[in-house]
Image (cartoon, rainbow, N blue to C red):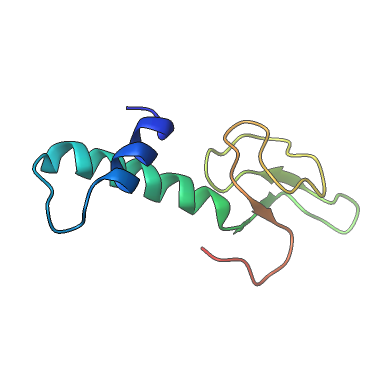
Length: 88
């Protein structure tokens, strides 16, 4: 199921009259996954020392070498926070 199909199911299915629970469940799972990617997660920093700023990793897919200051992971699209107050 694609995000577009999930959106269509979730927006066109009355909450109290779900005949196809499996399809609705799949659509809800996809929607929640997409929503969670919109909430910034703190970047993972490893190997930082006084001389070396460290390596930056995506908190979602663990891709290495995220460029400093990016707002989203280039690999998975996860919103990235460089501050300490990000949602986790």
